[in-house]
Length: 232
Ligand code: SF4
Image 1 (spheres, helix red, strand yellow):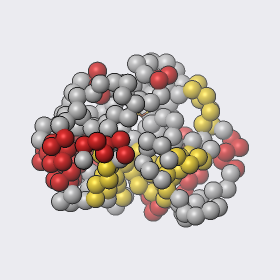
Image 2 (cartoon, rainbow, N blue to C red):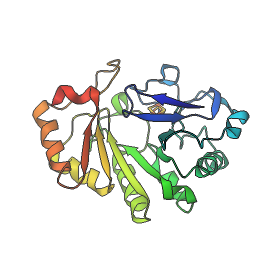
Image 3 (cartoon, rainbow, N blue to C red):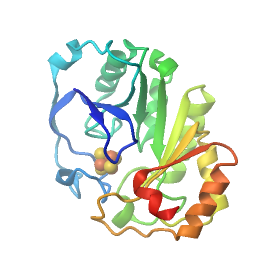
Image 4 (cartoon, helix red, strand yellow):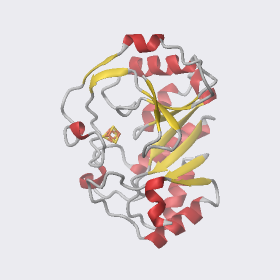
């Protein structure tokens, strides 16, 4: 189902979910907005494609930016390679729209770099910090360094990328963290804060966020999300 989202996500964006049922996500990020998954990385997914949604023609209205696979991480174990291919194939039918495919395990997307969708799609990843601050705050997804290496390879293959620093956590230094972000070669970078305030993550000071933004703006565009305006 395609839905307009003006909430805490990315400003004016549409979200696409082609599934029904319940997902588990083994990454179990403590700050995940989906309470039902939190700390529950072993629960088996009980999800299914909504077959009729694949018959919906998205060729209507203005060209849109569409976030794919709202509802879980597209590279979680809940989705097979065939599932991912089916989603990419469906979206590829609509080149008038721009799709954002975001994952905390972008290495898996290296298996799909030959897909035609990348002519009108971006791959994004989350970097909460350049530090590993522990599962208590960061869950079980691949390390930030691993994500940055994978994004570097993705960008080198010619695919457009973006990065989201959300929820932003304490980092080693503005220069070091900006270097990790630059490794991903993003066309734009979001900075966001833990929105729901359910988990108290270790946050940087305002002057540190300012310094980080300044460093990143030396090589790309930074978009401060609404929930991060408090740092400006
Ligand atoms: S990767 Fe996304 S869906 Fe999975 S637990 Fe983390 S925030 Fe939730």
